[in-house]
Image 1: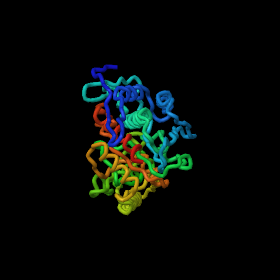
Image 2 (image 1 turned 60 degrees about the vertical axis):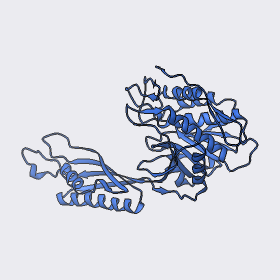
Image 3 (image 1 turned 135 degrees about the vertical axis):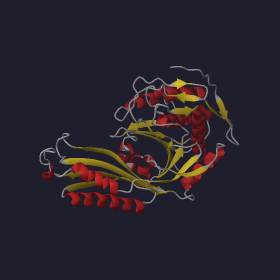
Image 4 (image 1 turned 180 degrees about the vertical axis):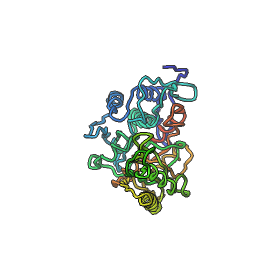
Length: 382
């Protein structure tokens, strides 16, 4: 690991209290330890093995559910308050075997062979250091639940399966949004996914093509009729994959198409369902074929209210940390979708990472430290 930066401990002064020390060297070391292990979905236990030893001695009781989610109970110290959950996910978008994080003066970079994994190991590192710094300060704090989930990037696997009876709190802070630290996601889209299977009739394309019915032609006409791309200011749609056919000289008897649509409005999303369904059905009828349509609600749109106590706590913590507060909308999904749907008010927070899901992924030191300060303030203000 190339390391051209020497980090000294930062001192964060909590107003009207003794200093809380955020050890930036320890924060960086923790972050690098997690980045150095491959934790694609199914291998998150490798991250668990980094987390637990580094959190030993802080009074946290750990347990894992049957889906691999790691849950930690950190009891209150000299303070009675409503509990809160601090959340991040342990998986990355694709395997990172052999990737060596490169530390430079401005941040941590991928070595170019794969993604870095700052999404969302930066969130875990920030939460861990906040707990460690708070514990060492001796400051009173309310009860905190730590929730590190599995399979977020491949379909919110851990959060979808998570049983909210496993936690006490009904407010959660998800360290997993794009944008600067200080961003609060107030609106996030719903998503629908479509699997379209067109069925026609095979025939020899050079001898008797008129006896065949091309499923690929049906799929092409359906796609041409679908509203795609940027539908309006809050709605998008995309054809993701197309598969079909048997050989160049056979009229294709079957073709499959996958489509997704997202919108901040469930009403507009349902219109997309109707439009995609009608386009596929009409195309099949035009050619005398058939189409099977499977529609899946992957997650539902949500909108938080500025008056919600969970949002107000986030706002207060951001301001106390000296960060610029931004209420934003996003086009992406997160574990916050699943928790909100289950009845846990969940606020997704900006992490400041750059070029995630690419080999150029980069985590600025300043953003990682800002996220840690934010986590400290969430604990202090709860």
